[in-house]
Amino acid sequence: MTHSLSRRALFVSTALLTLAAAVPGFPISAKADGDPIKLGIVAPMSGPNARYGAFSMHGAELAAKEINDAGGVDGHKIELYNADSQGTPVEGVSATRRLIDEDEVGFIIGDVSSSVTLAMQPVVEDAGILLLNAASSNPKITYGAGVGGYKWTFRNYPTDENRALIVAKYAAEQRGFTKFAVLSVDTDYGRSAIEFTKKYLPEFKGEILSEDYYKEGEVDFRSVLSKIRDNGAQAIIMYGLADTTPIVARQMVELGLAGKVTLIGNGEFNTAKTIESAPTALEGAIEAAAWLPAWDSPESKAFVEKFTTTYKDAPNNHAYVHWDTVHLLAEAIHEAGSIDQEKVRDALSKIKYKSPVGEVTFDDHNQARLPMILLQIENGKPSIKGAYTADIKYPTE
Image 1 (cartoon, rainbow, N blue to C red):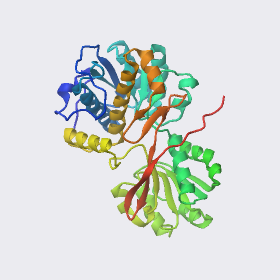
Image 2: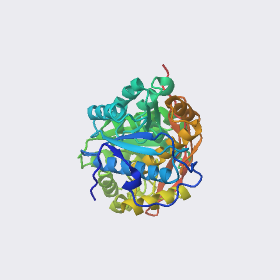
Image 3: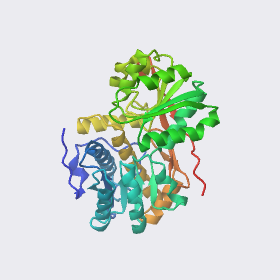
Image 4: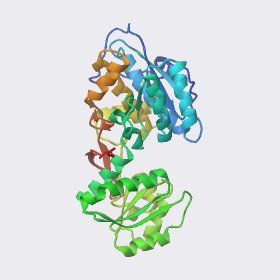
């Protein structure tokens, strides 16, 4: 399926099929005589991550359609503008400036890539434009936001640090693991996730017995797995590539680790394709996710149904978080009683927003306190164990 997205205004009333009434409980107005809410979406619309950009845009379109069909936000209709970051900081900055200078947007959601979002922060700060991030996970974004300096940056997405803490906490407290080995991808993401795990593991009396990293494209893990087999680790902490997980899992079976050592972290352990590659090795695997289509709440199920009906494709995480973040912004505008930038920013900092996963509030770094969904593979299928929250410890100056 291909999608053509122009950078100019997307008038969502003609972009989508007719949908049912808006999300229950959302504030609506019978009249739409206010100024429009000009909302820019910065995402990779081209390049290797274009698929993520298409899902992001479709999620935002669907939310805007729901809100506008219900009368808008206190009479203000949402107009969407998209700008292609191509997944690179340079293009992301250019896209952000075009939205601000040419399209005169009042609010921006972006980007999927953390490096792009980090580059966008000083641009929106200088312009006094609210940046509400929906998909970047690097903790540095909110280390430097709010009391950290960038008062116009907010994030409605868990960080890599949130994920590492929640996984470690569950593994220790619910599964009783105290001895761990590391086998993670050799990237900023993979190494950072392990550093965050190390930061919190002592709280749970956990220790790392061995630490190894792999390069993209690597296919032989036997020597590392043999070492793990012999050192007594109860679990392997893996933050890695989805294509690599089945290879590791099959070699775990080959070396006798399956059923004895558990995978934890984030490597798409929960997909049917991964589980089928080596069911005994994936049994018991632990993973945390921002959202899953299988999440059992009425709002989440309604979103999945509407998205699938509209786009003839099941939504992924990027579609959901952009859909949810547009609704969050709309709620903040409603509570502010205005589309004035400072009033909306102040309302967002105090908001108690009911998302399909749980209540969302923001800390003093403008980072959302929001639950993550904890999965465990049981009997060859992902089993949702609940939504968990954990407050991170910010670096001290």
